[in-house]
Length: 251
Length: 251
DNA sequence: CGACACTTTGAAGACGATCAACGCCGGTGG
DNA sequence: CCACCGGCGTTGATCGTCTTCAAAGTGTCG
Image (cartoon, rainbow over all chains, first blue to last red; front, side, top):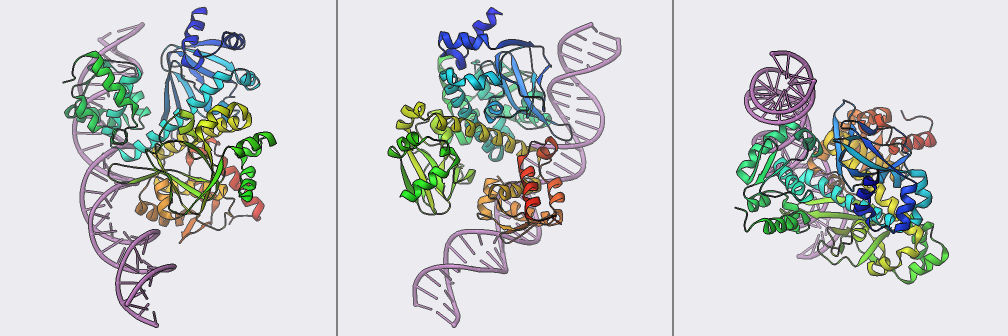
């Protein structure tokens, strides 16, 4: 368990906590494990804990009346899972959260958190910026959804993944199944699969779960016209940085 | 100008401020007016002020490379305009903000706000919940965008407008042009117009800018299957309350 | 080897976007 | 008073893209 405490102190959300604050938090929370496929909570369950991912991956999703799953987010170490629900004061969960792989989460009682948030100044500041960042990216994605083609969305997402996981742009493995990614991108698996084929001409090659950006310039022009023109897409800047850092040029 | 101060004290965002806090805020901010069609700020401008709508309506939108406008939000009195940008620490605006009608906004220097947010406890708490609420509704809308038909989206939105503005469900006028609404709903004006015709059979009648829910039960089933089944759609609850309150029954 | 989850491919269909033309209305200016 | 114009909205026809349904291929693990 102590190892887990080490890991959670390494998360940005908690990094700036003072020793006192951290001790306070640890005394009043616990780390819980979850096996692949298990539900952390389900839609309608009481919203009693504030969760933060320590290790592993979480899929947050809702179900349509006809049983279709809509993935609203895929979360990794350092992400808060239900911050919005907790802050909004919801008493029940509005979505399902399921472990995609072996999972460790920090579990903080909502009740305690509400009473003590003022004593955890830096945490509340992180919460604030975290929510703001997510809001912005949610709005950005909604914009993409309506203005970009499936091909652009996919290309853009692959680049984002590459930066987020610090992968080598010349070649990396998809961190989760295509089914999950398609659901996350709000498209059908079939559409996703077909789109990957089309992207081969555009400097993005995906075979099996292996991705490589054979022609990053082309891939980039093709994807995310919004961001690149507006120059507000941090992904591209970081991607370039990674390319420069890894090797001289990328094709 | 004193009248404007009265109005802004009435906004929920500031209602809970103590007299001291309010005085502090007023000393360090100002209320500025804006004529219909004028830009409050444009994409790329320096993000120097935190804005709150006191009176009137604001359209926040971005432009695609080909000049198409995408409305990301329509804001009314009490809404923060660029809270996400300010909290995220962005130095330039990521979108345009334009006055839809006669507008009054409270203008708080970002620099000052950053230094003094800790002295305005209740404001920062409101900011937090405000962001969380917006995040949730943004995710909800993204879900709707991919799971519901245009007809459902429109019906759902009209109900939301009715509740938000406290209109009579039996008949009210659209608060803004159809062009703006269509853009807000991320559909083309043509699609919106056609959709309104189809909704006539479904208990929602729109002629010119006059809306009436002739058969609220039917309209409801038709719209927003997500929310109603999940029972997490506050709109419907409030709509019922309004119907009960107005008259015995709604057709 | 067989079961099962995951993925690919094909063909058909639905839905919204796009292009184009027209109607309506308020304002401005002759 | 009428004519013209521009913003706004409606309607029609066509087109492209994504979804849907169906079937078959690939991989892994017992």
